[in-house]
Image (cartoon, rainbow, N blue to C red; front, side):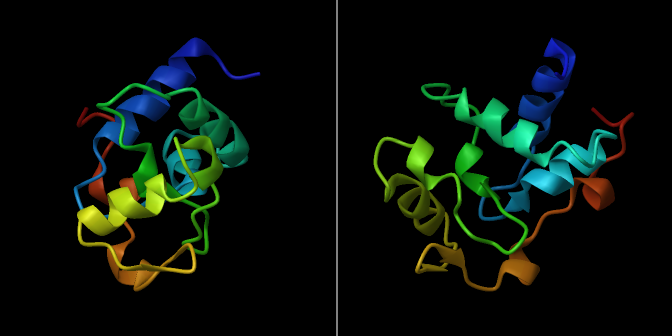
Length: 113
């Protein structure tokens, strides 16, 4: 089981994902030094219901699939939020995923936040 500080760190990283960009559960886990904890990242994000400053809709699986959609108000909420940010989503898949992918390992250094 991960610590409370890991949960706080996950939420802090998710808050840094730029508008109109997406990242993955695995990229967040790897950035935080726990690359085998992508499922834990997902469970942490699932617990953010109602926390408006955590853009959990910007986190998808390694293929760009909206696997977390069932944890939102409706099955279409996650895609609607991404579409509202200019992200093209078709059949629950982020179109141009590779171009929209935000890698915290490249964008951040652990000392920058």
